[in-house]
Each structure stands twice: as structure tokens, then as C-alpha cells.
Image (tube, rainbow over all chains, first blue to last red; front, side):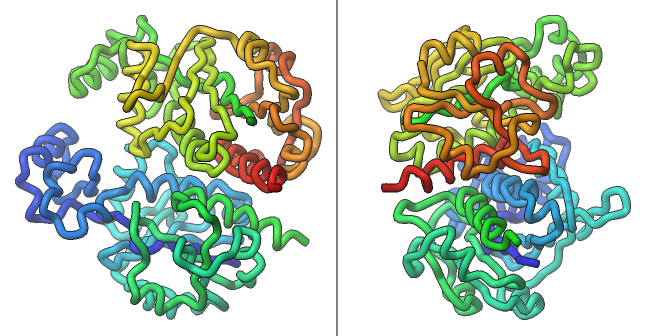
Length: 222
Length: 222
């Protein structure tokens, strides 16, 4: 079994101090939701997010959705050899259920995650689809006890997708940033064994995930 | 230069006979759009699509969006070595502009494609982002004149992602289905040189695209 953590993800609910902003309130009304039960989404809340600390690294459920689409539809996950966790910047950890099929429709995905924030667990046909709890990145890695934790970052040691797959043992954990720009926090890096760079170009998290999982499959082929 | 065609894509405007359906009319009102200027989307129009021919293969802009996210953020495309076309089931061809950055936000992508249906060309900062015209699949391949056309399908000859990349010469064209299930039409297959199967499992189009492009990069490395 391999693990993937999408770390410091730009996924959170609308902060309470933004709830009364007209753009947020109007969207909530249109969607029939309460403002503070909606996911923060810079596509809709750009104006309202002005002045929010680290705004450029927040409110990107679209990134997380595409990362998950590139994780859960892979043979590695479909065949039960990959467990996936979303760690958020406010230290929530969302575990993706074994074999979970999450919606390709973005709006359905958002609705599901908003429901998760209310219920903490989403069960579908008797199986846990998503489960959420408060947990820091280092608490998560301490709990999982992976054989090795490899973070992928442009500022890591020069490697390749194949190199990462070769360096990652069965039982190892790969960490990709769930934010649009910048680097991992020092606390996150501290909980890693190695930080590797997979390409000369800066690549999007979803591209890094797709290729790394593919190379893990290739490398672990019998 | 390599080409990618996402063929028979489940992308179209709301058919005129559906425009007055309450679910469609309400959504149009909420979005401030005309019903027939909106993309057909089974997530919103499921009820209204009842009775529509081939409904199970239509109205999936979400699939096309994820396929594009896995194409345009790759080094192959970013470095100008991949041209991408979306061929739709109603024989429209959308060319993706060189180096085009399309929105990761699904709703922004939908708005952009709806604008494309009105204007036929979307220009951003002096460059063509998207251009659309009526064209059949075989007219497109006749126009592109690729050195080889390889279709990827579960019912093709057994191969692998690496095998596809090795079989595809520089100047070749790869074809992936832009529909949620079923197979290419016979007319599409006729315009291909080969039909290859890349995996024992049925894989989603976006996974197939991500891995094939990666292997093309790996194979064409100097």
C-alpha cells in the first residue's frame, strides 16, 4: 500500500468575517445555502477575499478536485493499493474512502465536501466515501507511520517521476502541495524524509500526481 | 509536433426542444443566460434529458474540462510540441490555441465555451485561445494530415502507454474518446490507422490522456 497526501490544501469554509460580504451573501442566497457552510472559492469570492491573510493560497477547491480526479481513477487506487488524504491549510484531514468514486462534476463535488464539513463522515451504499477530522500534517504522518515520506517540490533535490517511484518503497508516502503557488511550510517539510523536484518546469499539482502514480504502478509491476 | 484529438466529445449547447423545460429555464434564469446559449450538462439537466437520443453519451462538459486540464498543463503542450482539438459528437471542432491557459475553475471554463459558441473565436491578450468551426472527424484528420492516427480504445489491440508512445511518430495524432461510455463510431475508426488498448482496466479518458502525453515526452527525450 502507498499513501498520497495532498498537503496544506486550499480548502476551507467561508471564514465567518466574510459571511456578510454582498458577493458571498448573494451567492449563498442563489444556491440556497448558508454563507458559512459554503466552500471558500476564489472564482466566486475574489472581491470578498481582499484583505484575507494569504488570500493567494486559499479558496481553491477546483485544484483539489482535479488532483482527486487524477488520483481516484488510477489503477493503483482502483485496485486498493493507494490511500489518499487531503490535509488542509487549517489542519483538517479528509480521508478518501477505499475505492471511493467522487463526482467528476465540480458542483457535485463541492456539495459533497460542504456536506462533509457538516457531518464529518459521508457514507455511500454502506461504505465510507469521505471522513474528516482535525489533525496536523505531522500528526497524520505519525499516525500513518509510512516507511518513507517523500515530498515533491520545485525546490527539492533534482530527480524525475521515475526517480520518485524508485525512491518510494511499498508502504511509503508521497506528498504534493494542494496550493496554487509557493512552497510547503517548514513544519510540513520537517515531517518529510526527502524533498525531490521532478521537473525543470514548475508543474501543476494534478500533473505531478498523475505522473507519479503512473510511475509507481510501472515500478511496482511484478 | 504531436496532435491530440478528443473525439466525439459530449459537448454541445442545450437542444432547442429542451429550452422550455422547467429545470433548464430555471437554471438559465438563475445564471442570467438564455437556455439555448448554455452548455448541455447532465449534472443540471438530467431530468430534462429524458427521452433525448443517446442521452447517456451527451452533456458532459465536466469530462472535457478534466481532459483539457490533463493536456494543457503538460510540458509537451507548454513547450509547443502538442496541438489539441476537441471534436464534438455534432461535428464541431474546437482548436485550443498555442500555449492557451484555460481556467481550472469549471464554471469559468463553461462560461468561456458558451462565449465561444457565440463568437466562434476567443482571443486573449492578442492570442487565439479557442477557435471553433463545423468539421467532421475525418475532415479534421484530412486537414491535419498526421503521419499516423492512433485511436485509444478498450477494444483495440493490446498495447501499453509506452507502446502507444513508441508507435506514434513525431507528426502523429492520438485520438481519445470524449464520451463517458461506449466506443468510437465506425466513421471515426475508419479515419484511424490503428486502434490500441492501453490497459486491462477500462480507464477514464483524462487518465489515458495524462499517461499517454507523459510517455510521448519520455519517448521523445533527446
